[in-house]
Length: 190
Image (cartoon, one colour):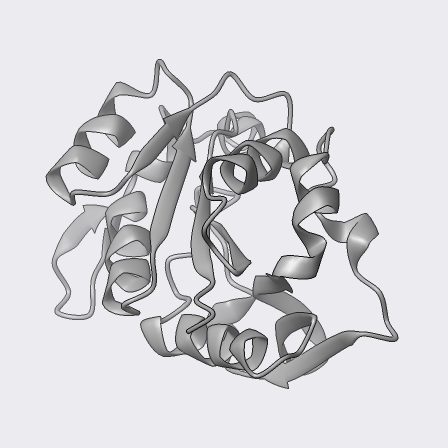
């Protein structure tokens, strides 16, 4: 079976969060889970990714000790990288997962993406679609999925634009979802 996996991006510096008055690492900020229990944001993201049943890998900074500890507790595979941007982060994860037959790009601060969302994108890729993106009311969301044909291009990404430049309107399939696929925690009020 052609199985894609989830790349969880957690190697950013959280600059917007801190400039808006947030303290510390935004991925460690407490957010309520489905039961209303406060947990670190990244823990919620990791849990949803793992519930999908898909292979996962987290990319974070080597000095992100809190994130690394939570990843160990969750038995989440990790790559550490002093990333210059999301493109470089994605590229490192793609190069580290040569057996995967596609990749779902999942920002670490988007904990409202569900396990079912991941499975929908993975199923579409496994069915032969080259690129898949969840949307809500025509707003682009995550995860964004790329089939294995995009391996070389993803593995050579640089900069902070992520994989946006690779999205091709002629091959990109949009799947309508819910508001959680566009919600992130860039600011403390999110």
